[in-house]
Image 1 (spheres, helix red, strand yellow):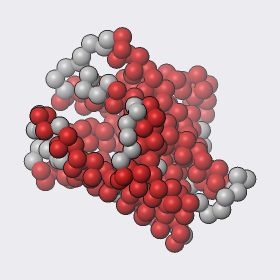
Image 2 (cartoon, one colour; image 1 turned 180 degrees about the vertical axis):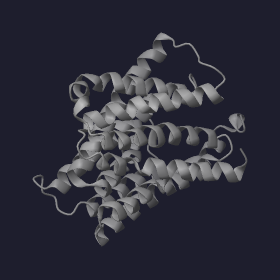
Image 3 (cartoon, helix red, strand yellow; image 1 turned 30 degrees about the vertical axis):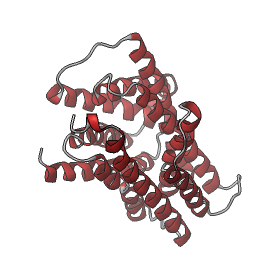
Image 4 (cartoon, one colour; image 1 turned 45 degrees about the vertical axis):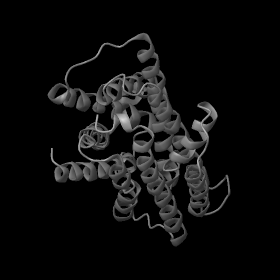
Length: 296
């Protein structure tokens, strides 16, 4: 894979990630539990196929790895369920933008859990994301669907931040695709008791959207992301994946006529700008902090 094809793969991966909320809403008769169970099941199949075609082989799991993957799978299940609840309640745009707050949660949690000093650019990220979320929220009324959906989306972002920190604690111990496969397997097992009794009631058309969600928005997107990082710099990947909510909101605008207000657009632009800027600064600082690992 050369630089051009890797960049194209990264954009396709970002597009698929951005379509997550769209496919979830298209599966209209399926509950969030069923959507998440089906997504995880199809993702396991897609990731297993990718690993068998490209991976160097499976690594044995130690006790510490198994516990981390189990915790990560539980967090991933909660993250997905809360996100799809937000989609059902408030629509794709608010759910996507609310979830996009996860880098701000990550900064705060890293400072609390790892005792790391919050740098100036990270503090600015938290501030800008907070302002963006205020603009995204039409009205602060807990009884309104928009506010309730945003709160679910924020919970989704918080759980994803915890998942990121869990994966960070064991980074490098397992191949990324293998770790994602095991975590999706845990997700499926967690949701099976809730989704199993109602699987037969799901319409065949909804199964199509759930299959596309699991295969393309999870398995293919994650595989493209991992493969492209072998060629693309982290700072470039951060900029490309800043387009993820843009893709999702644009498609929801066309498919569901979810026309975002000017205030929502301003808030979303502020959130995306803050995340892209902070990610690029972090990517530029990493080589200076760890010069011995550059190029490895």
